Length: 346
Image (cartoon, rainbow, N blue to C red; front, side, top):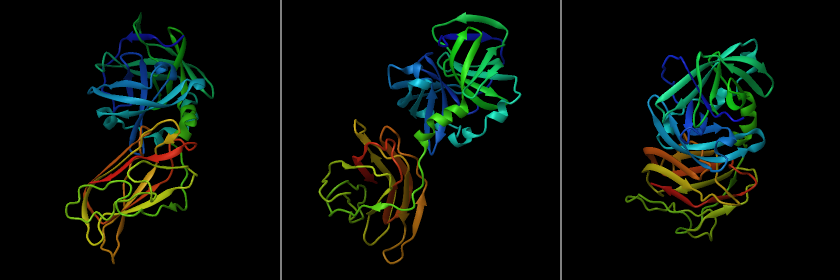
């Protein structure tokens, strides 16, 4: 039986620390929020939103609303991952790398925990007690312990977060009765979604030579520059998308914004039209050259991942630059062709 009940008990109201759990689609369920390399993601049971890839999320204290796009599903293990957009993404404070610690030591000898969930459009952040009654290598089964009324409501607790000794232990997957719930262990979750966020470092990149001026992607916003850096990743691409088979090796290309002076660079945007057979990049490194032609001065920029929905945006705060070097380290779907539709420097 899927979790479709709200356990209403006696509790003390509390503020959520950041936004670690969110309500999904008006009481359809819950989602665990986490951040990875500058982007926000929601992890939830697949059955909570099995009929649509687009979901709405609400977090409490204070209420924050966002939308998310499910881009990965594992029906066999009842798990899904969504990319979070909107104001809610700024409240994503749990780091994925912090969630991969050894959970076995936390669960060893543990007897109690807390179940956290969000209800009533984010106005109600609930914590109910739990007694651990069974632990195996995939699941933690608990019995709810708060004194109160077990009341049927329209939706339930699928995806609610279990906390044990202050550590996240798992998310609710299903229940055998109204008083017991089974949680997929967090270390099992990170094992399943690890390949989604993984990617090895590469020692070298294949370099793409610039195309003739006027070919390829557009560079805008340089009234004082010569726009010598208009670049196409292949000579005959014109202004159409650039598409390449992904070999597993990184791709590197360089854009010259001006031949003889440094210019104010405000932002870098890259987009991909995600569709059947095409993948956006994922991990991206950017360097900028702040020096003159005879005195190059390369500096690294912090860059988030490109989103699985095909959007990469970096605000550079009017930093000075003459050249930009972009390195694509890996992609979201390695079995598909890498595609870039726009690359804009402003």
